[in-house]
Length: 142
Image 1 (tube, rainbow, N blue to C red):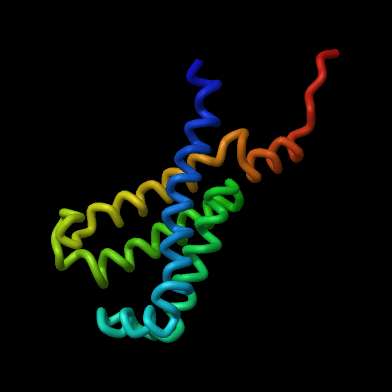
Image 2 (cartoon, rainbow, N blue to C red):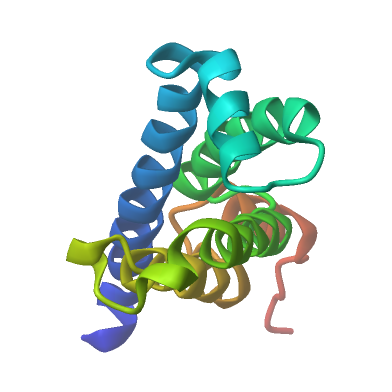
């Protein structure tokens, strides 16, 4: 029973976390705009804010899509987790733990979730899983 539920559970986790990153990346492009995101990054002391803003927005969109699809998960999970470490250091750490006070609680959960999904694998219902099945030769009983 657990073995049959695992691909669905991984799919739900990937999609939920991926959608959160995708939406936040999209907001940096469409709602705040890259110039607004750059100004915010400058205000919190992020180095090279003019380069970091579009890079982070793109990472969150592409990384979110990668999580949703289950593609290149170790790379996407690691990069998204590192992105969240940056958010913790530059934005949330000074506000303490509680998310309702702007703390790092939610961002830490996203980092951990991205790493967990990245290194657990996408399961049978993922691009990575489909590619793995294609690489693995079928065994036959002789």
